[in-house]
Length: 391
Image 1 (spheres, helix red, strand yellow):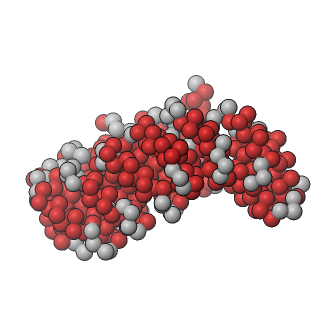
Image 2 (cartoon, rainbow, N blue to C red):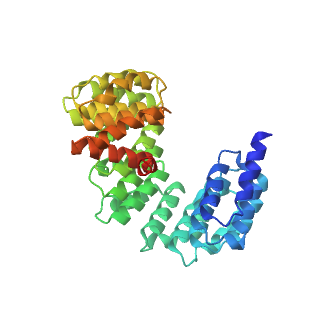
Image 3 (spheres, rainbow, N blue to C red):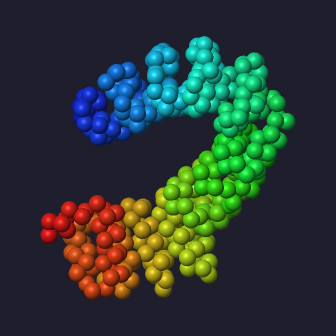
């Protein structure tokens, strides 16, 4: 009953005039079974007064796509014919493509979308129609192989590969190894969708040297096609990755390939690498994996003589949410190394020990500019500047 009351309250929030309240409601409705919230989300998407909330509506579409039941088919059919926002429509098609696969009721609705004036809608319609079998693919998608728009051409190529035209893989590989990042990313996406014995090898070959936006798509493709043999090459690339925003993509890929195997490799690197920077990166990444034995490796990192390894070990404990961490971290609140000290405060605050705020005040008041900088960084990360402006 309590959960039902919470769900109803969130559904009522969907009518709020405050966009942030609406987004909060949409995001939190995800915790409920999709079939429980389908009616409310459909009403939200149909509401003409909500059409300006694109980000919110896209999130609603993603939740709706998880409700794979027969009643939902009718509702999605209706959305496909009525949606006017091309961004939302493109998301609707891609999110529901597996759901639509093989259901002939969707074909009369997808076919006109091949002529849509938005390139993303067309590309996603091609990908969705590519799952309806060889006859549909060969009868509707051939002309898109020659499209000048990378995602449309590569989605069509992937569809033909799955339809039995495996020789077309060489065309996809040609675009993957070219110099145009748009074609590379589209080819990587296509390779992630086909079942070729060469997929993982080809994707790994460009992972270290491609542009960041290409690497993200390559990693998603590897999550779909690679085996555990690819774990170490992916880790090697991750340890030298300069784009922090890609860390999540690496972690998700490695989790898909095998968490225990990944943790074993990272633990080995953390223990045996002679490069403190590599050790520090490895131990930090361990904090994202919930595997028995990880804690022992992280605790060893706390004993390191290198402040980078110590600081990252503290961050790993924080990310794991380990309740025992507060006891282990108490001694680091007075560390001579600003980042170690700052990370210890941040970790203990996140574990609910709010009294550590006095250590931040001490760091702010001390004359060492490094302590001041570290404290300011922690305050910003935690979003607790209000505690200091009021002081």
